[in-house]
Image 1 (cartoon, rainbow, N blue to C red):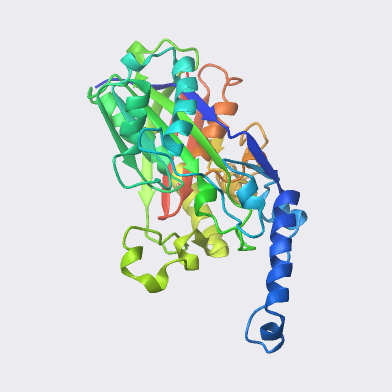
Image 2: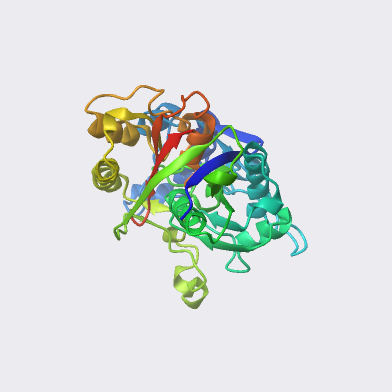
Length: 373
């Protein structure tokens, strides 16, 4: 059995960003046109008039101020309101592969590793752009990595579940090091015509190198002390898009083929579950929550994170204890907690205890206890 460390992280950020103000202008233009086109039906009570949004509403509801996206023009076009990403030939790297490569190369550099040092690739994200071949195997080919690769999807919790899968393989001697990547084009499955959710997501990709401690040379090392996972079925966050849609023509294009959620129910259910899981995880490892110097939490909603850490600490967390990136990145699904980890780790002193946790659809929750080397 080998001791395991995280020795490098990487981040790919798209070039384009959309502010709340830009998003609202597009949405409200759509609302005005919809209400005008359906004025008679609205007057008869047959159609519900749509309500405009505002930048202030979005920030208050979520803490989000802007988001990075793979395509800006298509999203902001009131006649389209979806990213425009041209189909690529099979001889070109896919969109997810391209994003993963950008994050992976940075993680490899920080870890002081080359492709020859990596024995496996895991692509863990909330939505994969095709059924097969696996995106992970494509990334493996693009980077020149030998060994194995596979995809996994546990929605927003995919990164922590991926870290556990990688850590187990390394610990058991099945691999010296594994590259775990989270390419997320969340705008591709977001309904930009829905007032309650059109602002939630952004696009990004993250990467993590998990390797044997005795082989690690990086100055960015964290011991993987322990991992803990939990799932409990819920329909409160759901996306019904899939290969069987074509077998039921009546449902094609329906609202449920994109991201849908019961936000208030999710908030009520998930916050106590996450706090309880992290608390139990620390206790099982004979660790005190008061000794945790940093919580890198899933970046979905600022109020959720505040409540979770308040339940754990019994007080409000400082910005240093629970750093936030969702104000500029929005919810990037599985990538969010790793973005926070990537951006806010260098200042921790040797021996510092930290928790990386993600949570979301499923329901699913992952907790990774780390200690700075």
